[in-house]
Image (cartoon, rainbow, N blue to C red; front, top):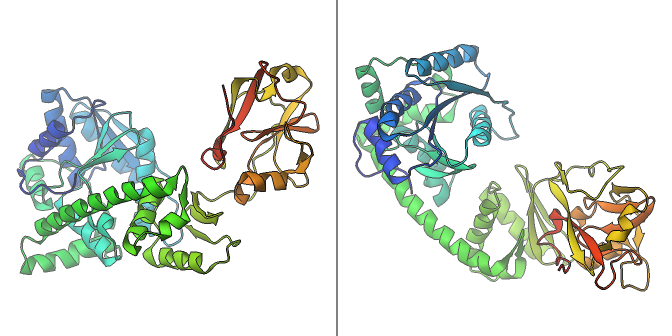
Length: 457
């Protein structure tokens, strides 16, 4: 679903009702309210419609703290929402610029992060994006060399956290919103940064689009229609991506030989689809193409790596691995562990303990002394159950196909100073459950999909 309906009433209330009829949100609506013209129109329209249709309605304002008047804007939002019988919740967003990211992008990323975390399950977050925003977004993506997914601009509805992001006003031009607001005597705040022509979107809004409209009066609606065409093309590309990923993908990895056997266009599409489907931003085309060339030219034992925007792409044993950057140091050891499940935050991972019979560590051993969790320092050795000799943990990891960057992150189970288990992989000889004996299997979530799981009853 995208973008811009071919014809839509100039009434924001009717636009909101049309969206609700097509995509009712069981959790109700939450209006993202900045206090500006567009979101004031949206809130007023939703407030008029919600009681008639029985829609639960909440209001949320995000304070970035970037403008001197930020606190006054938050007070304005509370006051105006209260005038219409609604409470306005104010969220604080911490804006941090990443390398190569402008202030507008950083603020947007921070805003959407706090809204995604706050949004109730199955609720629709209404934002006031309109036809002019859609045209500006398409032009920005075009000038950045975006492909069909970028040129599709903004969909009317998409998944967002545990609910949906909804843009009911995409079919309405900004001038129609202003006319509607003035006709009802609405009041709003003006953000001075909206006049800053150093920002790309403002330059398009105040300089480029008005000039284009002098020659082509319907340019905004035409660009909105072009975005809808690109969204249809992007949907077809995603369908190919799903098909190719079914052949070449396995868990968090991609088979490199399968990828390289595809025609170039489908290879590139699969790689981009896979990256997006794993929740990562797609790197720019030049860097991605250079990485593919590096893969073709690298020695079989080499490990090319591409790093970009909190993401990393690695090759290991004929497969591509996509992951978030890893910390320079492993997590802190757990000095006293009682065989309970644990969640690690950086990097994310979960240690679980599952019951087993005739496999895993014999439950009878659990009461023997103190247990702890440690991480590799080098030189660790283990004799896995059923093996004749002790081997270095390094060689065991290599034989199991555990990628090098994951090895220092696997928690190691110690009883006193003896290495007894490597979760998800091995139990030390002499500690395993015998036939029919009650046992426990510790499992490490980061290995799922990377190595075969141990057999469990």
